[in-house]
Amino acid sequence: MRFVPTYRPRPSALHSARAGVAASFCGALAFAGALDQHPLILGAALAGIALAAAGAGVGREVLAAMRIALPFALLVTIINPIVYQEGNTLLFRGGEVLGQRVDITLEATVAGALAGLRVVVIIVALWLMSVAVDPDALLRLFRRISYRSALTASLATRLVPVLARDASRMSEAARCRPQPAGRLAVARTALAGALDRSVDLAAALELRGYALGGRPERRRAAWSRHDIRLAAAAGSIVLLAIAGRIAGIARIETYPELRIEIGPPELALAAAIVTLAAAPFAGRAARLGVARA
Image (cartoon, rainbow, N blue to C red; front, side, top):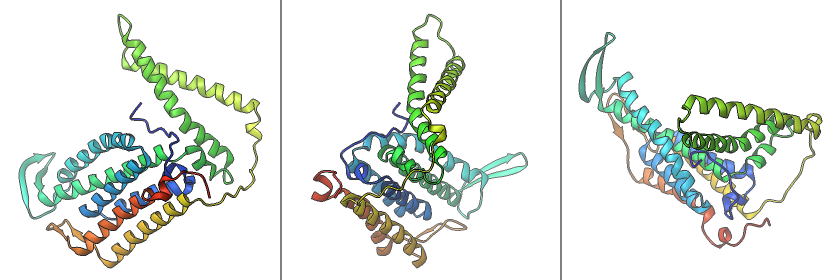
């Protein structure tokens, strides 16, 4: 169950902020990592996510995301130099596979590692959003656009941990038998239970009149100090990432020769991203209560 992102209310600025603002903050960190492949900027985005997770009290949950993301990063790192053989620095001269010569270059290996690190940043940022942003409140933002779609998505996010728990219990029960059932049989049973649960849930919702649900009324709530701090941090991170891209900061060239610029502008941009990611969780305003203003 630790590998299934599950939201739990906690007394933190990220949990207390409105869902749209909290999701934008996590999305800004993912955007900073997706926009640039410079290792310093990617490391800063990852450090910012770690600080935000620690400030929100979900450090262990985000660490589980790292365990899932790292194998994908390693896979990208291995595959890229095999399928893309550009670069002037030859590391390994291989043989021919299916009529194609396989040569491993330093540039292709580094490019694959940076692409894998970018995947890690995006996965961990989205994982942070999954464990720190209320899915019901987030999907409630779309209820005026499509009521039934928002309800379906909300139920799906709620049922994923339940179905994962059912499958785990079935697997434990199967191991207690003299002749344990195979994984395929356990998976088939879990799927059948999920379908039965979905049918019962659909019938219960229909009896309660959800099938006739219309467009709900618009509700306005005052912005809290946590909303303002997180929104300001998210907007600043996005603007800094775009401005750095336009200004040519953190340039990197992988082909045909590896060139990575590391200087005061790159260090300042990385430090700014880390500082902005940690700012909403620092100071008395973040610690003294979570009530709205």
